[in-house]
Image (cartoon, rainbow, N blue to C red; front, side, top):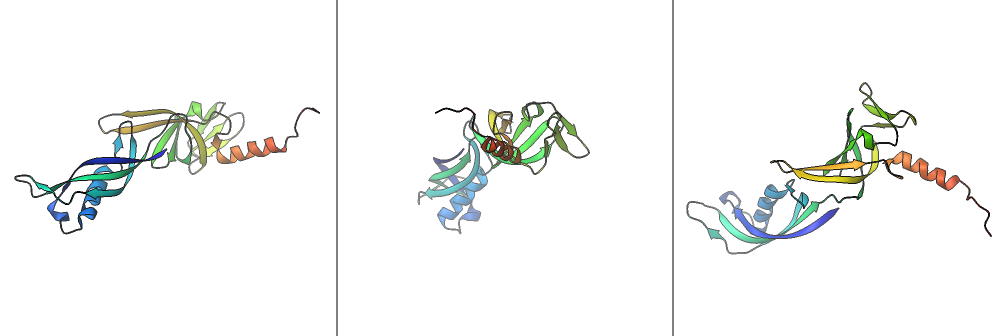
Length: 192
């Protein structure tokens, strides 16, 4: 889920940016500092959309930069448990799939791909359902549900676990086929 977050803080504007208008300089500093960062329990910062800085800055001894109080707006992507997402398969491995969902990648373990055993073909770089013959490869569009979100490590990484084992999840073509079959079936029963 994408969110707009209002923040306040102090921004250090280095001498190299002082020739620019204050708003531009502050936006540049904030974008360098925040874009792509993972913030625990908040998500991934996609962009700094706007900033408003105090006209008066403070100079600290032995530092040529100006420090301005600022209010700014962050656009963040925060994965939410049970959220249904769509994305593109970017990596196919024996252990599972990586799927690009917006600004991040989620992982689908091989046991969460289909309601059947799947095999991996290294030569073709695909996973195949052994009973149904369904094939998934790099570049396929899929729909999945988020079943796990974790923040960890010193590098502040974000781990998203996905499943496609529920109805109307999986490769988009599979879902379309399933919908077409359900529409084509005549209604059962003969109620009055």
